[in-house]
Image (cartoon, rainbow, N blue to C red; front, side):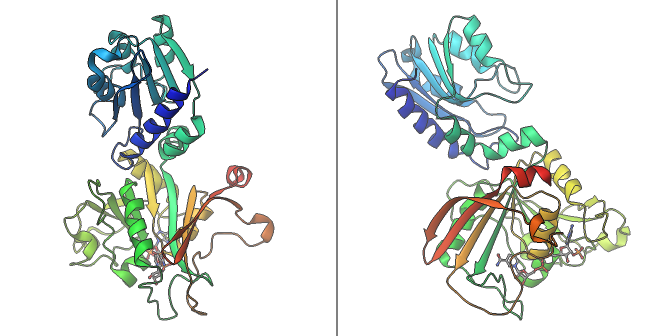
Length: 370
Ligand SMILES: NC(=O)c1ccc[n+]([C@@H]2O[C@H](COP(=O)([O-])OP(=O)(O)OC[C@H]3O[C@@H](n4cnc5c(N)ncnc54)[C@H](OP(=O)(O)O)[C@@H]3O)[C@@H](O)[C@H]2O)c1
């Protein structure tokens, strides 16, 4: 049984891990706290980016000699393989750690086995402490290991009557400055931010993170099948962050000449002829080490993602505003009858300034069937 000090240490480790959301892909976020032999915190650390030391290495370095006979509390099973850094299981054994408490088993076939190695070396190992909290903190990575595609959060801002723009297509601003600041945090936690050509045309969005200290900029992605929406001077093409324009792979090369961002990605068209094939887009992003996607719209592209069963979390900012006309948050998602509605479970509601932020995930059954 884990002690109260170990539970406190795990809560701290989950918080530490979250500091690096959006910065570690294709690796998970991991936090680690070392308790010395008397149960006092001797060191802590978190994984800060792929190719850099793992959480355990940071925490062991901070704990130094106090690690001997102590306990390592870590959000993910310590790895057992040599990648760009050495195996954490061996580092913990070498430091004289006598007990390891971790929250989530490592599902990655290359890295798993740390618990077994530790046990074989005589270390006392306990799994599953605060597993739900640690899983939630690593949702994108765990999802991408399981399904081989990035975890997609669709975010929108709507009026209380569900509209995301006015009849004349203006949408700035439906939500409050507080909500917009919150979106910058979401962007900072994501590896890529995606919009469609309609949003590109209407809003000329910038899509980079502002106002979040130490944020790693996400990859900015505009899905512009015909290479007509991203024009020279587009804000998304500045040098704040990397940008990729996704176009159909059958366009003539001269159509690409005026695209201001770097090399476009040519991907297959969707089978129904409407835009780019969503699974192919997600596969291309995964290939580029993207594990979490923030889909920022608009309603047409979001509808295509929902139709493809590729929305894993929805975050809606509902503003106390009425418009009465204008496009609604989601366009055609291939759902024509109520029995096929995509049902969601609300996981959080929060007041953000004058707005209400609702977070929801597809109910397991509905999601599995899609
Ligand atoms: N309030 C909010 O949260 C919010 C967020 C975003 C946008 N907006 C508003 O939404 C409006 C734009 O909406 P929109 O629906 O036209 O924009 P959109 O969803 O950003 O773009 C739609 C376009 O994406 C392209 N596309 C590429 N692959 C696709 C696929 N597989 N399925 C469907 N489309 C695909 C299509 O054009 P091509 O194939 O020709 O490229 C399509 O017309 C603007 O008024 C904007 O201000 C509001």
